[in-house]
Length: 337
Image (cartoon, rainbow, N blue to C red; front, side, top):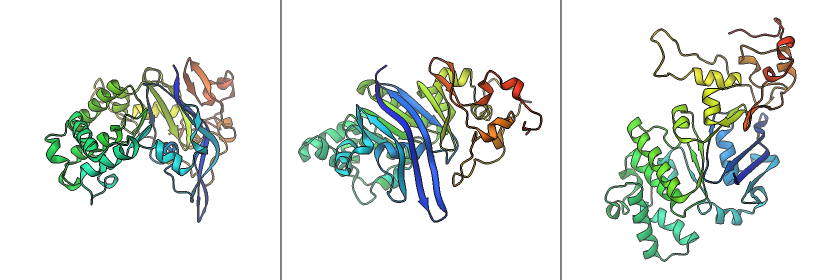
């Protein structure tokens, strides 16, 4: 599959009063054309920082890039000027943010916010842009679009505002859509409608999607591949079937075991992941999951494992995949919950 986006060895840090926070630590991933890639992990693991890096939306300072590259259609986005990025944002790459109420301008009518993008990127007249905006609102199932286009964000419900955000993101037919928690704070009925809408529009436009979410149910329904992040690094990545059917990394296994299943017995308990992620002011030398892992070994604390190939396209960063892992286990180094 041809890739539309390649992230290679990306490192992103923030300068703070207390020191440098290494938010994203040497991650690499690819997104193919017409593919949906989900990025999952706990809050603070670097998902949104990675997405904002693609869009060049991080405030600099305090943020800065320590290394790596973000290749979109053969060009490194990290070498682009702000003016060049303005031509890419909303046109070739669009983003749906977590909270539509704070993403939409409360002082501007919905129509004006959508029309602005068309007039800038598509060079349409005001009349043409308004007609296109009404057409897009109708596509995302906003009722009475001719009337609603003249209203302000506060006059819309949460689900309707999210539909407007999707319309705004899709209006210029982007090649890549980044959806950062697109269904947060929505009830399950509206969530299902939003996800169905995104899939329908993806099929019609043939775009790629990066989906950032905590909801593994959404991941199973939407994604082709899954990237599991922990403490600014990728712990495991593979097809959705690989991750859900044969998870390899202890963190991935614990994530999946913390989600209720329909086939669970009444006596079965959900498994919590005890402890907290490491402090990224002073990142650990070895595996970041060491302190919370029930299968940790002595080597895990001091040395970062390389990615092991589980099968074609399924990679996991865990010392348990080493050929000598069983003989190297130590009761002194092992962890118990």
